[in-house]
Structure formats: C-alpha cells, structure tokens
Image (cartoon, rainbow, N blue to C red; front, top):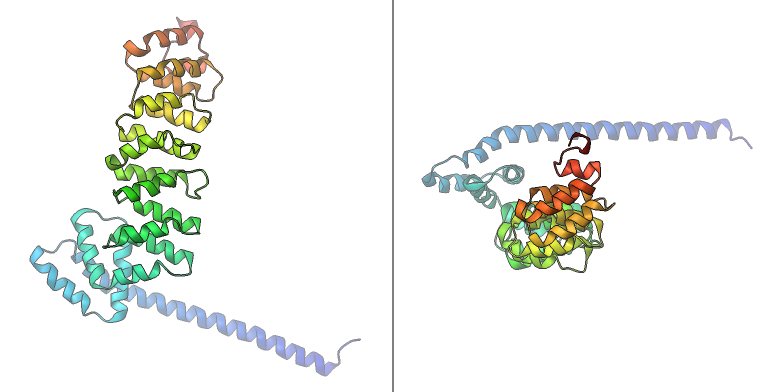
Amino acid sequence: MRPSDGAMQVILLITAGVVLGMLVTLVVQRIVRHRRELRRAELDQRIRPLVLTATVVEDDEVDALLEQVRTLPAAERAHVRRTVFHMLRDVTGEAADRLRAVGDAAGLVPRIFAATGHRAPSTRADAAEALGLVRPPGALDALCVLAVDPVPEVRTVAIRALGSFTEPEAIDLVVGALATESGVPGSVAASALLQQGGAASDRVRRALDDPDAGVRHGAARVAGLLQAPGAAEVLARLVDDPSEPVRLAAIRSLERLPASSAVPSLLRTALSDDPAGEAAAATLAAMPAVWAGDALAQLDAQGGAAVRRAAGLRRQDAA
C-alpha cells in the first residue's frame, strides 16, 4: 500500500529538516573548531615566549616569572600547562627543572594527580606520562598504581615513565613488565631498564634466572649494555636456553660481556642448525683469541658459509 501524497510530503519535509539540521550542526562545529584553533594560536603566540623565558632567565628572576604565571587568567594558565607538558618531552637538565617550576605555578601538578583516577584510559595514560616528565613529590607512588592498571596501554605508558626512577620498587615493576603476559611491549620495558642504568644491574642479573621466558629475554637484552656485574656466567648458561629469543639475546650480550665458559655452547650453536648460529659465530670472533682461538679454528674447518662469514673467516675456496 503506497502512502498518500500528503504523507509523502510530510516524509520529505521531515527528511529535509533532518538533513538541514545535520548541515547546520556541521557548520556550527566547524566554526567553533576554527574559533578554538584561532584562540589557541593566539594564546600560543603570547604564552610560548613566556614559558621559553623560564629556560634562560637568571636565578634571581625566576621568582618574579613564577609569580607572573600564577596571576595569569585561568585560560592562559591552562595554556601554560599544555605548553610545559609538551616541551618537557624534549628538554632536559636545568631547563627542564625550570619548566617544571613554571608548570607547578600554573597548577599542573594537582591536575596530573586528579587525572590518574579518571575513568578514561587515555587520560590516565596522559597522567602517567606527565608524572614521568614533571616528577612531582608522590609521582612514584602514583606510577606504581598505574603500572598495574587494568588497561595495557596505561600500564605501558606508566612503565615507560618509571624508567626515570631508580628506586627498587620502580625497577621491580619494570622487570615484571618484561613477562610474556604483562601486556607491555618488551621493548618498552627493556628501554626503561636501560634508562634506570646501573641501579638496575643487580636486578637484571637476577632476572636472567626468572622462570618466565619474557623476563629472561628482556634481561638478556640489556645485561650486556648495562655491563651488569656477575651476569656473564649466567648469560653463558642462557646460550642453551630452550627459548630461541632468549638464546639470541644472551649471545648478543656476550659480545659486550664475554665469558670463557660460553665458548663450548657458542661453538655448538654455530655448528648446528640453530637460527642463532650466525650470532654465535660473531660472538666467538669478538672474544679474546686465547679463549676462542681453538673454537674458531674448528668453525673454520667445519662451519657453513654463513657462520664462517659471520665470524670473519676466509672463504674455504680462497684458503
């Protein structure tokens, strides 16, 4: 049954009204967005030089600058907070300390802590990043909570931020994030450990014996870079680890942290079909000749072309 002409007209009018309303809404949204962008650009033109000044002023001028920030209107203080947050990603040293003071004067710290409990994961992640950059008192405790957040993305940002803390609880959380099922990319946790530096060395050495292959892998990746005391002998054992990524990471770290006890396992790996064979050959070549000379001679006689090349040995047909 077809609708009457009157009903069709009503339907068309309603449809036209809906379309017109959508167009009007779209235009209004664009106008509002454009005005907001203009306003932000205008604020940035005035506020960014003020924030930049904080990185170069003399010590006796800092207090006056901070007082100027405190007396800014609310919208301008908000822009100061945003500017400081973004600039801290690229600034270090005394200039970063000055920026943190400016952010504090603009009310940044209370807002960061308030955001750690926000229901939106993206806001909690931003708060975790800000805690690592601003490092206000209480930041470590807040990051320890965010490092076990139910959302993997939040945990990842928190673990990255914990790299700037060398307290034992921070190091333990970063090592724990290396675990296979942690939800945190291993590269993020490994980078955080490297950032923690020597303070993490002992914990990294102990992590080489962890039951979780992900933890062993991450620890093996950074042990050589950190020159972790006592790690070389454990790395030598990991050349025979059941996990291929762990074996490969241990072999590569042994280039920087050699151990004579690793030579037999490295030779066996280089002469086998193990995917880590070429890395094992290269590590043997990097070791002192007094340790690896006999192994390299055996590799020269029995090794395949790829592992011989990795060890820097002459081609057999050119011998």
